Length: 101
Image (cartoon, rainbow, N blue to C red; front, side, top):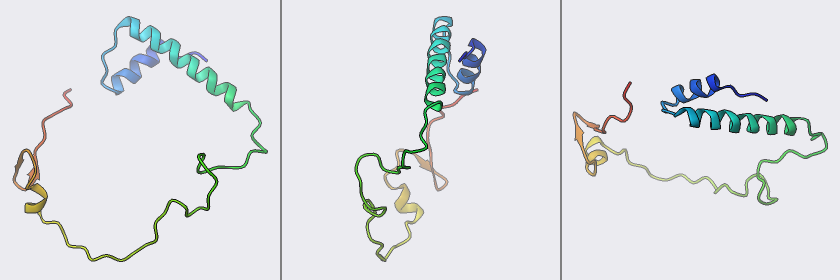
């Protein structure tokens, strides 16, 4: 399947990535290969394959769940929540800006 350079540029823009033309070419090729592989997988007959939720071992549905237990819980206040914050102010965590447009 074809994955065009324009498709790569659109996805890169949505992900806020700056790609060189060489990277755009490579990504278009690689994504095309992935889509071709997905098309091949879609042609497989899986009608006789039992549905699986856990692929590592056979176990009952509740094997990885602990039993429910009621525990006493105290509400964490703002002061306690912010006591280890690197920066805080006005009752909130302060973090540096990471996305600029």
